[in-house]
Image (cartoon, rainbow, N blue to C red; front, side, top):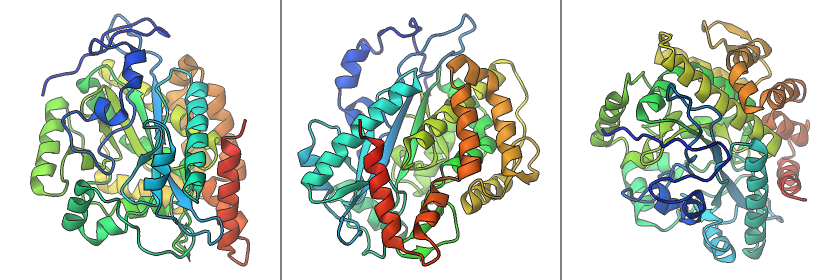
Length: 424
């Protein structure tokens, strides 16, 4: 597979990329920019790519651009159940600001790529504002929640050929994938660096998942989990943690084998915890629940960038890869989605079960230099302290439900919090 090399540009300027300026690139529709040779469909477009970042003389990337895409539900404010009206909502929104997803009860928005996380969050606020207005025009309200809280009917498929092919092949696994996540994209220099990041980031991703957890309820049931969305998503045969690939050729060989096996329709259905964008230079981290609170979104984005930078630096320094078995990675992910940050997590260095604060402290220590360079250290330290003290989105939903398990109150709280997240 040819290696994608990113031309160096001056930090903060708008440089060339495939003979287009950044201004031109961000005006091209998302699907056209990312999937020129790929069929459209559920998660087939990796999100707005991060454009070229500044390079040091050794070829490594410094402060990397970040972009975020968010999937959200449309909710009837009366019944608090989902509304299958994304086709009407998209008609209300200008351009490609709001897009459809696998089910008619979902919409998707995204940020542009930025160096400063404050700019990413500003984009997401504006995108949520536009999506909320579009939802209102379709007789619904926007809900940044990962799973349907109230008892509801099965998801109504968005009528597109690719989605129909997915349902035909994967059956009930596809029909039950009614869930919303958040995907973070971070710059890489080329495929070799990106695969090196994928190989090294694996034991750290459960910690990112833990701070994002926000789906304890699903279709009227208390699941006892902090993230039931993650359990739902793992039903796809191409989802989850992977073995190290070794290099870009190894990654491509593995990808082709999975597609050839029938476990994925195409490259767009590779639902790894982290993957390479096919046509543009980013690593896409896919473990997070959609966060109702954009402060949690900023924390996830900062951790993701810090991890990509730190893993890339380790590769450039020829630091040996620490081996982690996939079965232990699955155990680490299970602890994260079962408890969030309220109990124990697997330590990312030795796999020991430790208090969540210790595991998260190890994460901050490991990526500290990268956080410093990006200006994200205070944001991350404050964010970790906040979720440890106040809990994650899952804890907030449980508090809203109260001892009587009032799920209507949970939805009301999510709707109000989503609306508050995009107010001026």
